[in-house]
Amino acid sequence: MPYTIQELNKDKVILERAATGFNAFLFTSIGCIFSGIGILLFIFLKHMGPPYSYFSYLFFLFGLIAIYAGANLSRQTKKTIPKFIIFDNRKGYVQIQFADDSPESGYIPYPEIDSFFIDIKEQTRSTGGSRSSGFTTTYTYHPTLQKKDGSKWELSKVNSKSKAEEFINSLKDHLQLDKVPQKLPEPVLTNKMENETSRDKAVVKWRNNPGSAPVFITAFCMLFIFMGYIITSSFLKAGDISFFFCFVAGFIFIVFLIVVYSKFSKIIRDYKTKYGFSINSTDFKYFEEDNKGEIKNTKTIPLKDMQGVYFNFQPSEISDQITSLYIQTVEKENAPNDKYSIETFKKIFTSTNLPLDLSDLNAVEKLELERWIQYTIKKRSGVSVL
Image 1 (spheres, one colour):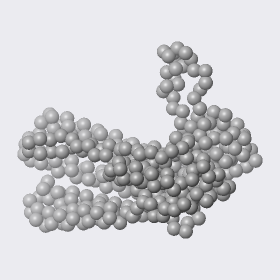
Image 2: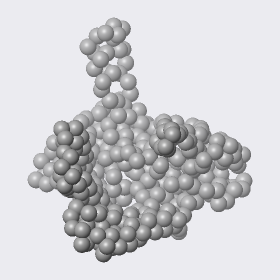
Image 3: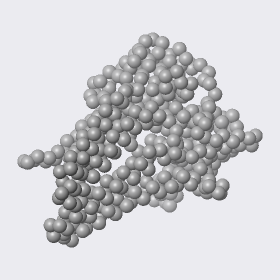
Image 4: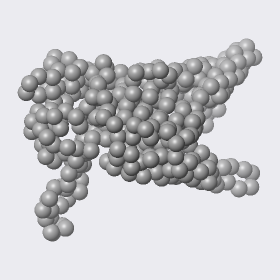
């Protein structure tokens, strides 16, 4: 989701979330067209019987999915993407404001900003024709803010490098990053999380809401089944079923089962699991709790080994990693000199980041959680983490 510069002066730079009206209209229009085609096919192909008459259902179902996506796009964007990113030179920090006149805000102090750079993303698409076919590569350019903890905040999306450079130069010309920040408000956890703080430790728990994922997965399954039935029925009617067809169909079906299983298992796991962590004077402990209250899958990190808490704000990415906040630990010191030793391979294949799956939290809520963890660790142990 790109941002555009709405205000630019010596006191502040305001970036505003781009409108989603056109994209929503596009999805809805395509959905209406396909649904209309489905209705027409049902009228004109009804006498032909299956499998041809089922094409009408296929088009109609695809149209409904597109209409739902278009209707849901604006709501989902407003639910997850902040409306304003405000660089305030007077206060010395970046304020991430979720909506108009909203008290829900997150903060990035200027001293935590490392640099601005252009993140270039490559997309390769196939091209076809009667004489030649191949692939074409397109690039999009994303002006990005990078914090000193390594996390990235994507600020915009343009189709030319010169426009991306102009965007970044406009920011640099108006920002006073050496400004000492004013005292920030104490971080506040969202009410989507349970905060059980005592004298000995702070405990935070949450659940992940699957949202509209079950709807899309169910629609995808129905679409796949319809397509499989139509294709198989066509081959059977023509009497042209071969070993190669069975092999390809079987392979596609196995891939389909793997994808559906991974998605549904994640939904079921979220339904049955409450995630959480605790912080005391010495350790950060992650845990998962089932519906019976039994603790499982725990991992403990000594606070002295914690290097940072961060997450990446990159709306253009479609990845489970974007929903996570990471607990970063330091590399182990005194690594063995023998590059072929077992200890070295253990270090290579052991992740130094602990992901916290926070798919139900928006960017502002995750940013405040990041600050809350840093604040709580500092308060209870005196250890400072980025």
